[in-house]
Each structure stands twice: as C-alpha cells, then as structure tokens.
Length: 367
Picture 1 (cartoon, rainbow, N blue to C red):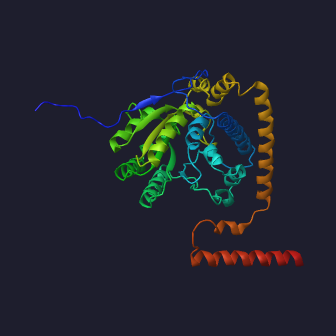
Picture 2 (cartoon, rainbow, N blue to C red; picture 1 turned 120 degrees about the vertical axis):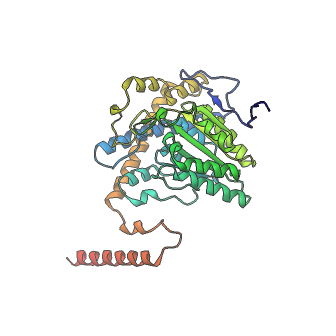
Picture 3 (cartoon, rainbow, N blue to C red; picture 1 turned 45 degrees about the vertical axis):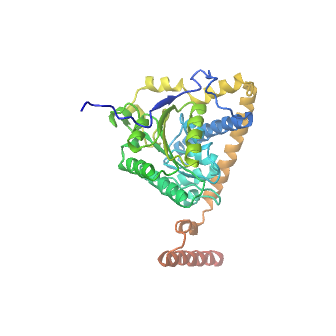
C-alpha cells in the first residue's frame, strides 16, 4: 500500500497584531473597550516600574534574590486579563504582573523576597496558587484543577504559566498528556523568553516552535508575538472561550525575551551578548502599546508623565508599608496558611512559640 499523510486536526499558527513600531493589523485587531486598553497600559507600566524598584531594593540589600520580569509584561498581562475572577491560576516564579492583576498586593512581593512567610498568603477570594519554584510542577496542579472543574461541571478554567525551560521537564509532557486525554479546561501559557537561565532555547529542543508540541498531545497550539499584548490577549481569549465551552486545553507559546536577569543572583553577560539584548529592546511591549494608544487618541505624553508620577507615589507607599511590616513581624504567622487542618504536631509547636513569646514579653515588661 502507498504511503499517505495522516491528517492532524490542528496546525500551528503564528499570530502578531501590533508590530514593534506600534502599527496595527486592523483586520485582526480585537474589539477592546477604551477603559480596558487604558487599564492594561497602566498595569503594564506599573509592573515595569515596580520591577525596577524591586531590583533596586535587592541591590541595596533590603530584600533577597528576586526574578525580574522586564520585557515579559505583555505575555503575562495579555493572557491573565482574559480570566474571570472565579477561574484558577498557577504560576512559576516570574509572574509578578499576572499575580498583581489577579489581586495580590504589591507589598506581598517585598515581604516574600524579604524572607517573610506572610508574603505567600493567598488572599481570600483569589483562586490562585502560590508561586512554584520547582520547575514545571505548577502545570500538573493546573491540570488537576481543570479535571476537577470538569468533573464537577463547573464553568471555571485553569491557566498555568511557565517558561521555555519547563518544556524540557517531564512534568510538561505529563501535564499536556493528561489535559489532552481528559479534555481538561486548561490554558498552558509558555513564556518563551529564549533562555532557561543560561541555556538557550536552541539547546533545549530541535523543534521549530514550542507551540507545535501541543499537536502530539491532541490539542491546539499557537505561537504569538509575546511582546504584542493584543496578540496575546486574542489567542488567550480564544483558548479560554474554547476551554469554557468544553473544547479542551490549548498551548500558547509567547515568543518574548527576558531583558533583565534570570534572578538577581545571575550575570547574563556571561552567556549572552549586548547586541542580542538591544535587538529585543527595540521590540519593547510597553513602548509599542503606547504608540498604539496614542494613535487611537487615548494617550498623550502629558498623560504618561502624570501616570508615571502617580505610579511612583503608589510604589513608594507600598515599599513603606512592607518595610514597616518587616520591622514588626509576627513569628506565629509561619504556622498558618500551610494546611487546611493543622496537624497536631504543628499545633504543639505553634503553642510552644506562643508561650515563649508571652514569657519573653513578660520578662521585658518586668525588666
């Protein structure tokens, strides 16, 4: 019998709507309200400035190791902005902006990277998991959530974020396989920032795209310009709507770049050149979005300047609040927010700490 090509149900596409100069493809442009566009812009700019302030705080020794997000704002925000409050999200460790959009207070990041457990607290009403340092494990958590939502016939979807390095982990394939088999309502957001710490994407896989790995697991996969918030939003909205209506999971590869450090313990000059960085700086997601908004008469230079001042004041207030909390920590907090029901052994330890703190306070007062 002759050979014949097997027809696959999906093909891998690349989507770009807003180019690096701010020009928009009118036929692909999503219909977003002016209010949402300005809200997205403010969030992106605030995320960038907060990221820069966090880097300064670390260099001053006021917090510990921190992973900057510079350059990846559109990949995070364009995706997470498509979720409803009741949906679920699991993250790695570089999704600062996505978490802030979902309601995590800025001061929580300063507390966390300052070494305080209180920074890990997930506020009531947020269906989000804490950050996952173990590379790739959060993808499996998202699939479990998605399977549970489907089993219970709930309309929620789960979105999970990870980097290109995580696609080299077995957890990635296990998560996609289970999501595909059980048609779980999960949206996999891969922030392909070209570097898994010091390992370039080319040394991780010989595949032309990371998005095409979805095909082996029987789900749609799309590569988008990760510095184009309109493209990321459009792809994520399609995936979320499909998942919510019972159409199963989607893998979205956001083709972007980490303009800063992997973490503040990293020196990228050891493994990449400045020319590469400058090439990607010209594709900055915020500047191109500002040109787009300016062309729509939604933003002016004066408006940006006023917004910068407003954001600077807001961030300073956050820093002051966090540092005040760090000066007066409550050691008992470290026992809370770990188990739904505290084990007896941990309860004994907590009670002992409370007793010791009470004795120390009495001695100080009698002193």
